[in-house]
Amino acid sequence: MAQTKILLYYVFTPLPDPDAIRLWQRDLAASLGLRGRILLSKDGMNGTVGGEIGAVKRYLRATREYPAFKNLDVKWSDGTGLDEHGQSLDFPKLSVKVREEIVSFGAPGELTVTAEGIQGGGGRITPDKLHDFVAEHQDTVFFDGRNAFEAEIGRFKDAIVPDVSNTRQFVAELESGRYDHLKDTPIVTYCTGGIRCEVLSGLMKNRGFTEVYQLEGGIVRYGEQFGNDGLWEGSLYVFDARGSIDFAPGAARIGHCVVCETATSEMRNCEDPSCRAQLVACDSHTEAPVHCPTHAGVLA
Image (tube, rainbow, N blue to C red):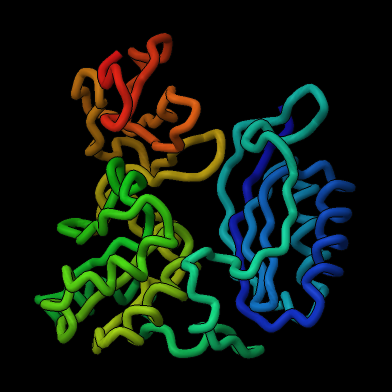
């Protein structure tokens, strides 16, 4: 079986003609048989694509030849495999779009992006420096920059998990006053690969949080370095057919099935067609419909 890889990447950089880049990226990825999601805006690119390892390498090499993308932040992980047409099983199709934001916080006017990247964000802490930072600042608070459901199966120890179901809710959440007591506390924001915290840490600073940092490379880089032996607990939710990944065998199962309370890292969509909620649900209930509390038949 052909080896497959998934590429997670982003870059903040001014793009004078994102529509033209969209056409190039669409044609490039399609010609290599890749699937995934690529978002472009005037402020950069954010994507995840999967396919046969040689094709993914060729895609990355060609993309980095474009000067604005030479500093692309890239993370690799193993894919599930290829279908009968030689395309990634981890994504249903290839989608390449231009949006106002490459991460949809609903605050494009607050971003300042130069050729050096996003400006005004929180200070960067690399995974290898994180433990020393926490030891030196014992009042450090971890602040989850993801959707709340992602944190149900994995998060940093004792992290604050805002009650948001999408990134557009973060601004209102920060302005709600719930976290005002943290405005003079060391805060380390973290997210899957780092891109959401590039923006979130800046939004927090703009709202009076004085000591905000971001975990460089996100959970992925930290997990690659420390596996199950650091401050991360559980599995990492991913937005593709894999559902979640572990950084080492024996990862803790901190999520609990909504039906039977079994510890698990498995997640499923709410069965109601109008609902986009993601629910923790173990393999024992794959044949039964599972609903979120908002809908009738919660434990169907």
